[in-house]
Image (cartoon, rainbow, N blue to C red):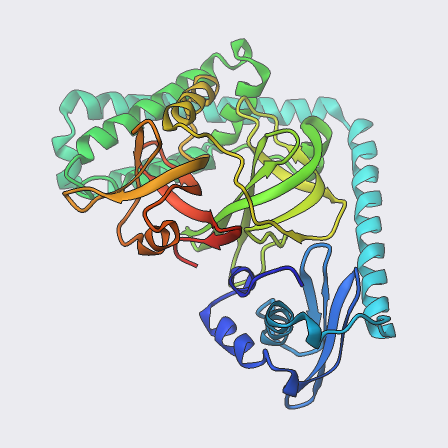
Length: 442
């Protein structure tokens, strides 16, 4: 298999699953091991004999064990074994229990596609007048909620931000609850995040004022929605809390087929959910794509995306002025290992100019993909970390302790992929000596 052990770790649901999987990465506990161009398989001896198989098209596994945490330790063990020694999994014809599973997966994908097409057909002939009426009622409720929010923000700015520090988060949560009642849950979530800004840093008043300005810009944009470009109209609705089904994205968005390189990934906790952001880059088109996925209660993410891999697929992009967020509509090849070089900017100034261009179209973005070629990690006198290009342009790195990045570079230029938040760059991966290396927290 062309994945590294580090990339297998990225698939695991937690550290305990990684440790358990590594203990099973020995051919002594496996029998009937094999592989072909479609799958890996084997039988693992535990309290009973478990049948394990992995579809190489998307690295989704299936095990006969009763574990609810997916992928289970047996699936991870098979992947670790394949990553360490491909000779332990000889090329052979797949057994019936593997063929049956692959056939069921193909049938399930076909049923989903037919269901999607049927829904699109039904939607096209549905009661358009009723939908329009419901949308009008919601728009009225949202507008009333935004009017009340604007009054509150005017009072807040007029009385000064000093009162915010003393009152704590309660006023923010009160306003957020009112926005939920007004059917604007997206903006409500933003207000709850803003409640954490006071006293969080020395420059919190400046940060809070910037956030208030962003919210005011959003409320004003909604009031003149019809005058905005179509992409910005979609962004405004989505930021307030309107959602699109995947079928709507495929129907109304932009479809693009390419060989997609998975250059970075982050997983954060947000309101009892795990949020995974995977950054893909089209090898032929040069387009960036953000695959945003959610998971609750340690459930696996819907799509298996491993940094440092490449695959042919058709992506559907959300209607937006930025054209960044996308979903994987159709995979067209198995996952392959990618070892660089990274397709990116050679100058920091060019990257920042690209960010400014995107912000001119969609001013509410707060995260941007970044790929830089031939930059050098350095430590400043104040012990802050930066990456520097050949023209001495630099970007500050988020956090501290980027010693793995420094060791990979050896003090020389290196290709780096990361996520820029407008102030600092979070390193996600680097390419050194023809190897793709994951960075940051697993």
